[in-house]
Length: 223
Image (tube, rainbow, N blue to C red; front, side):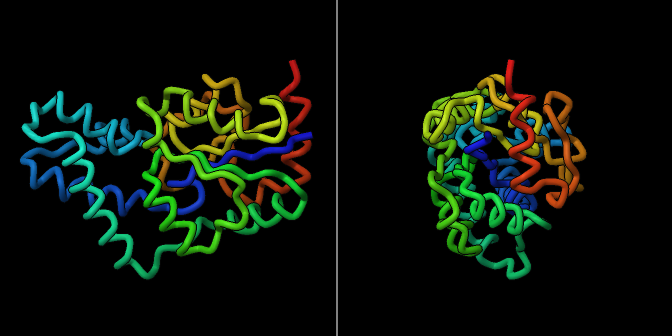
């Protein structure tokens, strides 16, 4: 049976994407450039470090990548703390509780920084549900590179075939599949520009899943 569910965070558990977008575009304006929505969408699922590595090269920015990351993070933290209406995505808390109550191991594998992950865990009291929290800042390459999911799967209580990933981005789905994992694509109103066609299953609301339904995915994982 399925023993481990690996969750992405941004766009899957909580919609911090508007906060990230606000922080990024404020910083881009300060740096003297902007991006189209399509250009920005290509960075969904990538770590902040990886985003600025690419932008530094593209725009010949005279700043160290770490300096750029810290400047954007400061803007994000302020915006995050000032948005009282920020909520978990519909149905995800009930799903997390159901999976946990049925003895499934939950792992978070997010491109977000550890500080952002900790902020979300504290704000929504989710830390007790997750056995491991894995941040993209621990890896040299971001999604679609599979390293983060390969590491998450190595922390699982069972073999890779007993793991599933829940993702909402093109890069995230590609990373999960490159890691050899079954992937559930979550399509929300905020992921219209994301291609989830590589996912093994696509849902539009978390009420489409439950512990029993996730366990029933096991046959699809077998060769």
